[in-house]
Length: 608
Image (cartoon, rainbow, N blue to C red):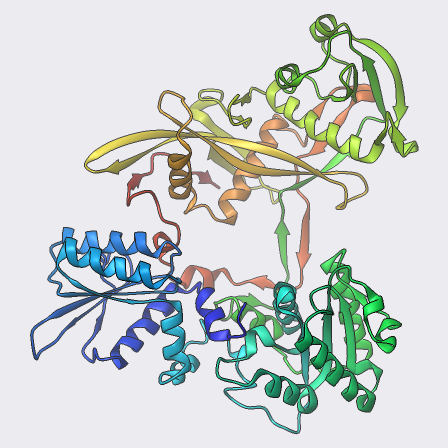
């Protein structure tokens, strides 16, 4: 990733309204003084329009934050012509990257098809304008260009204040470095990260040495295999360690990002205790925050969560009020204590395994040795010629039948949930392997459920939608399809994670082609946010439990039980929903459909 926060912020735009305004401001300064912004929804492909009084020529402007910029260009051009707008020039502005050949082809195609001139602005062209003659616009759009990333260069820093946590990293470790910068901001620390705070045109080595020497209170150095080979990173760390000799050992905090050969380090660093991030970012940030707090590192940001939220595009998003977060994780209340093994006269092959996976949860250790929590149904015993071959209390031994018992138990829990779903009426698609709700399994194909706060709701398990394309209408059907995963790191034993997938077919039940599946899924799910996904997840859990507080498989010593109430946590800060609802986001500009299809709703989810 280039050390250019302008490009980074443009790539990560989430506030489409502000992006429209920025583009209009730029175009006003670039020779279109009478530009009239339009924008918003239902703009017929026009975000702004400009008529030159000197020659009477009309220019139409279209803005986009979609990656498939060329498809969006074609869509907007088609809408402009379809609505018979006067247009002599089309100006298309996006935050995508493209080659010179792609740009030239777009210009030729628009000229050939519509007889218009086309002018295209992409990510690099926008970045160059903002870094150069229109740099003053950066400060006007804090929703796009996060103020916390720019003060060291744009606004300047008080040379008498040393309150920055400088995060030094190699390019390969940028993701962790940027995450650390935001995380430390949320904790009240002022952080400085080269991937976010350097502008093109600056001399990186000089800027970073000046920040370390004059403005940093701590240097957090990320060590990895790439970092110890990067000559620039080696020089920066050496400079920071020389400053640390003046400031004290707490000034320089080494962090291990991944495995690397410590013998390649200098003798002083080699013996230093590293803060480990390689196995867990959660564990690493806990130790780093402890090191900062015990060393009396300054925390000058009283509104740290708000500053961190600004880096993600919406100001005021975080509020200092506790909030309860619900998850899609359901605790396993009871797990069978014993795993049984069975010898089979029939060899277990792929076809048999597939036929049996919805009827019996087992693992084939060898082609003739099967293990399971539960005894198999009688017809499977007869068909395979099964005989008992021993058992194991899996929690009291680490290995059995050559397998780690903890991992084996997790696998059997997951497979048991598939059997549980099949027994409740879910059907497996032989081609995709998804376990889905068939049509007419439920009255009106609806799932009732209850939230942890007692509120009731209802969602569609199966629904039909239609798309219009080229004057014709096509119908398709969607089925909720739960997928089950098991984790062993969220509680005393196991936790079930339910993820909602979609099984999409035509109106006769045949699986849609892959290209159509992707487009229909985007159309269908672009209005499903956390609330909608959580409602469907809770509804699936309640269906499996048949309205009780747990869903089970087996009985007695073979009893497996999972709670229908998901894990939840109370966090000290919350999200201001009013900020989200007030923000206008051109969702169709982010989640495109297939060939500009229009679609109609027939079955919106009903949630109390």
